[in-house]
Structure formats: structure tokens, C-alpha cells
Amino acid sequence: MSETTPLKVVMRAVRRQLWWLLGLSLLCNLLLLTSSVYMLQIFDRVLSSGSYGTLLWLSGIAAAALLTFGLIELSRRQMLSGIGGWIERELSGEVMRRAMRQRLRDGRAAADTSDVTDLRSFLSGDALLAFLDAPWTPVFLAVIWAMHPLLGAIAVAGALILFALAVLNDLLTRQRLARVNGAMRRNRTDAAVYMEHAETLAALGMMGGTVARWSDAQRGLDARSDGARALSTTFLAASRSLRMIIQILMLGTGAYLVLQAELTAGGMIAGSIILSRALAPVERAIGAWRSYGSYREATARLSELFRQCPDRKDRLELDRPKGRIDVNGLRYHAPETGEPILKGLSFHLAAGSTLAIIGPSGSGKSSLCKCLVGAWPASFGAVRIDGADVAEWDSDDLGRHIGYLPQTVRLFSGSIAENIARLGPPETHLVLEASRRAGAHDLILSLPEGYETETGPYSDTLSGGQKQRIAMARALYGDPSVIALDEPDSNLDGNGELALAAMIRDLKERGKTVIFVSHAPALLRFADMVAVLKEGGLARFGPRDEILSSMMKPAPVKPRRVAEARV
Ligand SMILES: Nc1ncnc2c1ncn2[C@@H]1O[C@H](COP(=O)(O)OP(=O)(O)OP(=O)(O)O)[C@@H](O)[C@H]1O
Image (cartoon, rainbow, N blue to C red; front, side, top):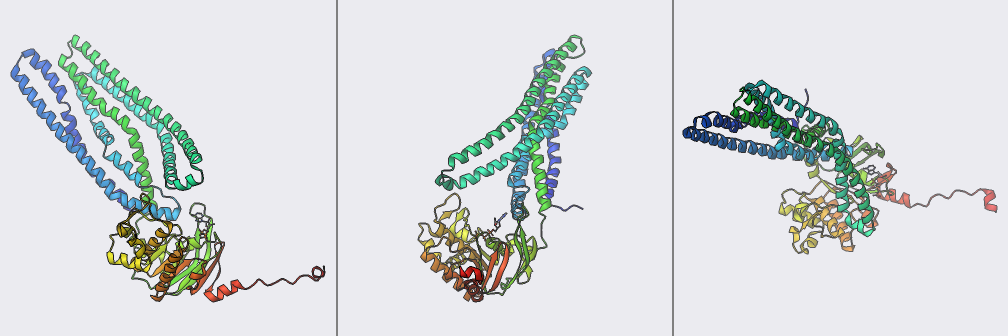
């Protein structure tokens, strides 16, 4: 049996609601017959009898019926908008969590929250109403048929031609539009990255080139999209004029039948009104087809995401670890290329000890840090904290016991206090404790709005060093047992370095396991152990003095050959 996912639960609930909506649509569509029945009665009863009383009664009943139609239509639309809001609430968070997990694991996510928006806009908009009204088309056609088979035949033929146009439109444009939409999404992501790094582009004189490159790509996509849309628009225009032609044909045939005394004048007018009701959903459904296409693609992507990233309720929730780390045969392969980045590392670190990771650029230091804190899942082998595999640990639960300072610091939208509290509800005493331990308290107080200073990508007023020290406080929030710092001294001034050294000393004294990537002697003196990485492998691992002194030793001089020495 296939696993129940939040998407399936939501879609099941939506389907249940659809039955109600279908019922309301039945009432709406029946009430839509009001004007044609009214017209029929006016022509055939009122005008022939000249009865004002009948006219008054008929008008009153018609007005009441149309008022009821208005109320039902309102509740239909309110139901749809309620469904839309509910879908967004139920799915967005789930999708975002899974998309982030998949991106960490596979380098890309099968779907994202914009797919939930596509789902919502189809299931709560006019497009779905068009599809809900479409099943009543045969009912209207049957009514026309009952009035006169010739009128019925024209109406059925018209509806079939319009439907065929809709199907053809879908077949010819679906794949083209899907491909263009995918490429457009990628181009939008590129634009967001360029905007975010506008300073770099400006400083390097890259703005013109970047904009030209992006615009070229966009123009190409626009041309492709215009081609597909033009085809769709042609179908729409063709179906609209065809509908009007059918309408005229109906009236003309109706008039002929009136002359032949096979139909009343009221029947002729009423038949024409009913036909327009019958064909309108078909025409609206053609317009809604594109929206349905996006909905179908979004649903496929979301199903794929939920299939590839199932819920992991069986994950471990363990007590606060002491901080012993065991790395066994750790391999990490780049998710997109499969290129090995970490090549079978094994070492053990006692709880409460401090490890310095050193090695040349690109040797895998940051990658090792990410694997140690559970951000990157091991491709083979395992990282264990207090014996528990970090891959099996619930990431939010594990995160409470881990402090991590990434090489490139990012603060998120919110106040400094919220950022330090890892975007959870800030507990004041924990925020103050973390920032004091990170030596960031005075710095934050010196800002005009202190801990309430807004920061993040939309309010970037902090210097690199300030951000780094605030991120350090974020790493220490909740007093975690294992703290990994990736080049913590890269943006610091003299005061910052002193605060960092004091922070590491304090962590050591309080028995925390500290891992840092740095070659700075001022930090290396705190290390108990040193890991030397080279080309993704562990070149050396051992007590600091042993490793550093062996690295300091001059390379043994090769004895020169006798002949060479004589020259
Ligand atoms: N997501 C990724 N996909 C593919 N390759 C990657 C990815 N991230 C890192 N690498 C590669 O893995 C290798 C190790 O990168 P890593 O950032 O861990 O090195 P590092 O030792 O921390 O370097 P530096 O000292 O310059 O920060 C590099 O060759 C890098 O190109």
C-alpha cells in the first residue's frame, strides 16, 4: 500500500469538498435557467393573455430565484477561497521542510512552495468553477433537445466542436508550456541571486554583462512562451467566435421553426439563452485549461517530493549528548555530480575535547564540518554523536544540541534577538547568555535598537564582523554540547579575536566539544587534537603538539649524488 502523505490527505479532503461544490453548482446551474424560463413564460403566457397579474407573479418568482442564485454563488466562492487558504496552511510548511531536506541530500528539490501556490490558485479560482459547471452542459443540451431535436442537434454539435478545440489546444501547447515554465523558474532564481549580489556585480563592473546575459535568456524564453501562448490565444479566439456563430445559427433555426409553427417565439428566445448557458462552461474550461495544466504539473512535482522525502517519524529523539564524536568511514559525494568530496574518514573525539581541522584550500574542511553537524548526510559511513548516528536523529532535535557557525555567515529576516534564538520565540535569558558567552553583548547594545535591530537580506546594516559575532551567539544559543566553527576568525578585528579566544576557552572549561576550522596560532593553542585534511582524505589525526611538531620538522634532505656534489 502506498504511504499516506500530507498531499494525499489534503487532496482527499478537497475531493470531499468537491462533492458539496458539485451540489451547489447543480443548484446554481438550475437557477441559471430562470431567465430562459421567464422569457418563455412572458412570450407564451403574458404577451398572449395580456395578464399583468401573471407578469407580476412571474417577475417576483424570477427575482427570488436569481437572489437565491446570488447567495449560492457567494457561498460557492467562499468555500473555494476557504479551501485555498487551508491548502496553503496544510502544505506550505511541509513542502518547505521536505524541499530543504531534499536539497541538502540531492542538491535539488523536486518541488517548492510555488507549487503549492499553483495548486491553490487552481483549486480556489475561476478555473475550478469552470470545470464544476461543465458537467451541467449536457443537462442544458437535453433541455434544448426536449424543446426541439433540430435545435438540440445544433447545440450538441457546437458543444462537441468547442470541446474538440479545447483538447487540441491542450495537446499542442501542454509540453511546450511546461518546458518554458521550467526554464522561466530557473531564470527567476538567477535574477534573485543577481539581485542579492548586486554589490559584487557593481564593484566588478559586471552589472551590464550580467543584465545582458539574463535579458538574452529571458528574451529567448519570452519568444518560446509567446509562441505557445499565441497558439492558445488563437484557439480561444476561434472558440469564442464559433460560439457566437452557433448562437446565431440557433436563433435562425429557431425563427425558421417558429415560421413552420413547430416552436413558439418564447421557445426560440429561451433556447438561445439556454444554449449560451450550455456553452459558457465549455468556453471557460478552454480558458481554464492552462491553469489546469500548471495544477497538474505542480501536483506531479509535489507527489514526487513527498515520494522522495517521506516523513521520518521513527527518528531518534535522544537526551542531551555529552559530545563524544565517532566518525567511521565517512564518505561524502557531491549530490549532483557524484564526485567524491570526503574519501573515507575515520577518527574519534572524546566528549569535551577540542579539534582543529586544518588543510589546504579545497581539501574538504568545510565539508567535514557540515557532515559532523548533520547538515550534509554521509553518502557512506557514519558520524555518531554519543553513539547515535546523526542521520537517524531528528534534525530539529539534533540542532538543539549543536552549535554551528558556517564559513559564510547569513542572518535571516527578523530582529537580532530572533536570529540568536534561531528564529524560534526568543527566550531573553538564553539570548543574553549566548551573546555574552560569544562576546557579542556589548556590540549589540551599541547598536541604536540593540537586540531589536532588524536584520536579514532586506535590512543589511551590519558589518561582516558584527554579523559573525551575532552568528557566534546564535551558535551558542541553548548551550549546545557540540560546537562547530568554520573559520570563526575570518572577519574579526583584534577585539573580536580576543572575544573568540575567550569564548573557546570558556567552552573548553565547561566541557563542550569544540571543532573549529582555522590555521590561526591564537586558536590552535586551544586544540587538543588536530585533523589534517588533504584532497578529501584524513592525512593526519592526533594530539595537537605531535601533529604540529611533525609538520614543522624540515623535510629530510635527499643525499645528493656524488657526481652532482663534485661539480
Ligand atoms: N555542493 C558541492 N558540490 C560539488 N562539489 C563541492 C560542493 N561543495 C564543495 N565541493 C568541492 O569539495 C571540495 C572541498 O570543499 P570544501 O569547501 O570542503 O573545502 P575547504 O577545505 O573548506 O576549502 P576552503 O579552505 O577554501 O574553504 C572542493 O573541491 C569543492 O569544490
